[in-house]
Image (tube, rainbow, N blue to C red):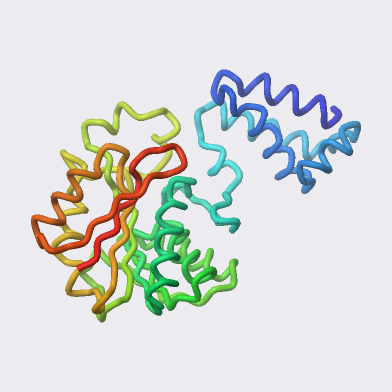
Length: 276
């Protein structure tokens, strides 16, 4: 089978699952298997797939038709121009999170921050990006030992030195930081069963934010100030409809906080900055 034929075949098979993104996913799969970039796939459209390549593509398509996210199938995904290894122990890096990373980088540059804590780090994509682009001394923490190992591997693959810690939120965190970043579980427990089938592959531990989706924000609101250096900031990812509830929660603990809400590229409220 030639590359152009394979692309069309993959697209046709994936349309029922991926809709308008089927063509994109076909190109990503072919690039991953052949090692060719998008332009090379076009330039070499008449190239025959090797038997091993074709077999791998068939297995990938089968997994995708079972609703497994392409990010887990590939075993890696790009965020902030960096390629992170993915695993089912951790949330998939998503473009929405770039809003949080970019906000943290701007704050760090403006206030000359030196240290950062990425709590609920998962793949480590937030903290590693801060270390790579902002030069911060970063501590990555997660309750899952598998996630801590994954984040450490990603840091090594991307050539950054970070501190690793297994911690249930702030329980094992010592010292203070200039900036604390977090993308906590924030889906309401009742809503978990209503999510797209793809999300069933992601760890519930990283999704379930309790009855109202705010359980982890309560912990953050109660504990972040004592772990923040003077002049520091808390930067949080939030659900699209949680800006007011999370802001109110933070202000209830300290009504003198400066609060700023930022929107993602889709126009949804996605990030909260809190500064004492």
